[in-house]
Image (tube, rainbow, N blue to C red; front, side, top):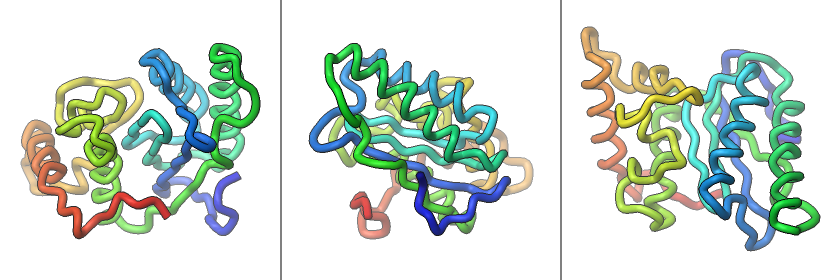
Length: 193
């Protein structure tokens, strides 16, 4: 279950995240990342619009816009559909995730844009890559035009960030790349609360 005091509302934005129990990993091999993404598409595709994501070895972040109110059921299906085969393949038992997914409401567009940057910078903060677009398991490559995707639509965030009349998609992608690269660690911490 998500945080109990958050009201789910269609059209609203939410940050969903979770991590592995103890010091375990959620993703061991490249195929695990792809499998989880396929489950996101299957179980969240009809209830949410995925705006950004990042999958790291021991946790994940999703930035969504809710289409329908049945997010808890969809998230439960996502977790179970990943955990059961993962446990079978890696000969493990028990919980894979630390607990129920965490959910934060995103109340303004400025925060939405900064949150997308935070999500895309997680692999850099974890010292997995030097530049966010070098991490294959996030939506940063879609944001900067390096890859197209069936999973996400970066245009909502790109349009909010760069709302100048007449800006092309390429200009918005370039501006977003610069925005991410100009991250100020004093402004946004990577400590999860």
